Amino acid sequence: MTTSTVEIKVSSATGVEVSENTLSVELNDGRTISVPVGWYPRLTHATPEERDNWKIIGGG
Image 1 (cartoon, one colour):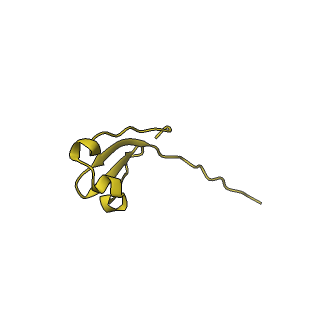
Image 2: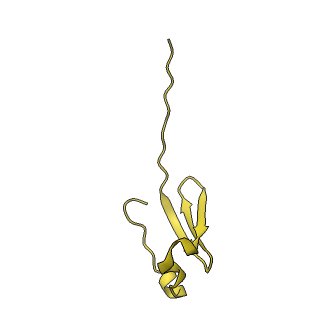
Image 3: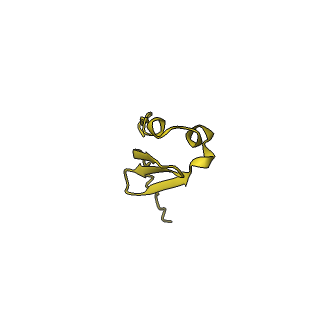
C-alpha cells in the first residue's frame, strides 16, 4: 500500500495597503488578499494618516 504526504506551507504577510475602499495584504508567496474596508469600522472612520500607521506582528 502506498501513502502520500501533503506539504503544508504557511504564508505570512509582507505588506499592507489601506485605501478608501479596500484593505489589501501582500503575502510572501506572491498572493494579495483584498477585502472591503467596510468590514472594519475603525478603518472605515480612520484618517489617511491613521490608515498608513500599521505594523505586522506575530510573524506576519
